[in-house]
Length: 156
Image 1 (cartoon, rainbow, N blue to C red):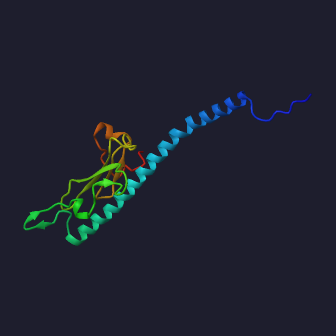
Image 2: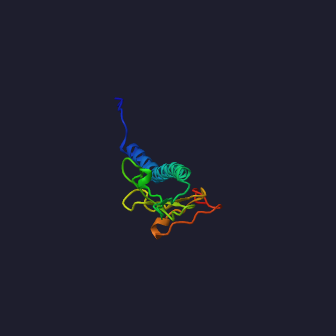
Image 3: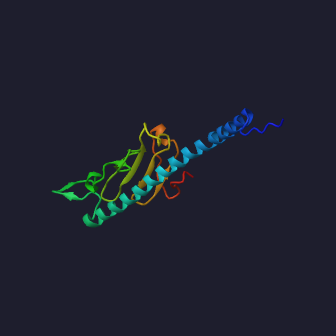
């Protein structure tokens, strides 16, 4: 009598589950890093768009901090119709601020919000000379990097 059974043995199923588990263990952290990088690049893009708006403001007003009634009035994000959050729609991942506004200078700093996936990814900094920097984890120390001609957003 020949028995013709179809199906999988318990051992075969356990091997497949173990292989899937190993693949998931390797792939999930890579996926998380990919998502962080994608959000970071989106924030960098929005900061560059904002820099263009800031330059337009300077062209129209001949200064980043024009004199209004003989009082120097520095540019704010509200004047550029920006909510100070990145991205503008959906869950905010970065707090954005413009600091050091003088008639000729400004600096944008995007700080990851602590309760988001971007926390510990680091500050993004861009200034009026288009110098930029990013240092992974700098938001944990609270100190943003200082942009220079030698720094960039690649973290190198």
